[in-house]
Image (cartoon, rainbow, N blue to C red; front, side):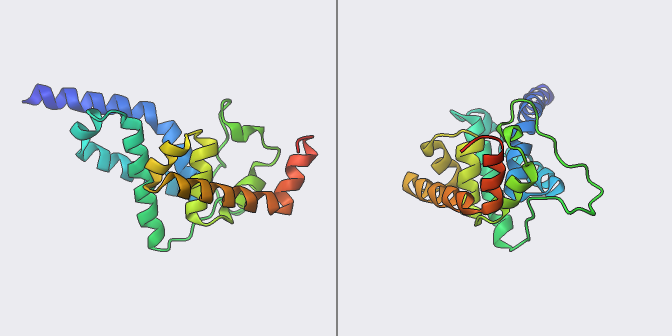
Length: 179
């Protein structure tokens, strides 16, 4: 019995280590604060560990875990906790730096982009983050958000339209020679 538990724990640990960075980035985009993102990912992995047999045997464990994280974020937001996507200027925290493969690293002003995301309602933010930063298909995003593909399309389109309408974000993009 002890050997099976150790093997299961080792399998979970390997999964945890491999998924932590990407889930942390997604959680940061959803919550806007490093500590809140870490709490969200930790809460997600606590739930995943409890259901590890079911997760490990799932057809796509990453989809399962992403759904757990979106649900945990939605429950947190329903409690109306304030989310800030840009660290306060008086914060002693070092801002998150994008890794080389991060598409957000291409933005001229990451702070402007994060502030712009903070203006989106939670469901639009989730749709935009999952579709465009996580590069999920509409069906995968719908599954992660627990809604229809039509709702994903609607929320993503509304979110992108709101982002395009923000003058500070538009100026940042056009200054870099992009339109």
